Image (cartoon, rainbow, N blue to C red; front, side, top):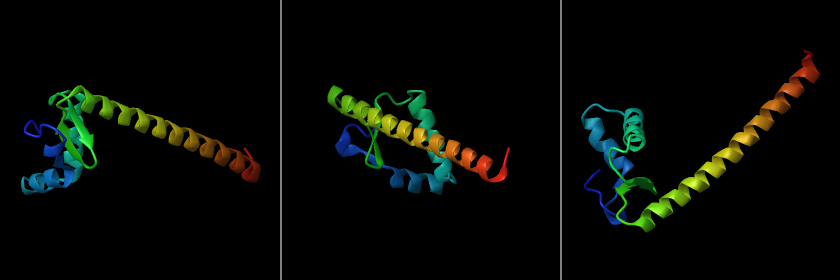
Amino acid sequence: LFKCQGIGNRIYRRQIDAKMVVLGVGPERVTDMIAHIRKKNLVPCLVTYRGGYYVATSRSDMMDYISRLDYTISDLTRQLEDLCNIKEAARKQCKERFGT
């Protein structure tokens, strides 16, 4: 991943998976490994973009990435709120139909 400097040199996830499967590492484990690398900042400024990973080479790259993360967090928060509302509606329906 260190070699993937700049968006034009990104490595796609399918390429990583293909290389790792030869070593006996499945896609689920690759996901865990990449998450670990990102959480522990083992590859500074590693960002994801359209199915690939690259090392940001400018402040602009990082700010774009942070903006995408903000959008993702906002979207996931809305989805979580929707799921909580669906769960509460299901509880209410269950109580109304089957009692306490």
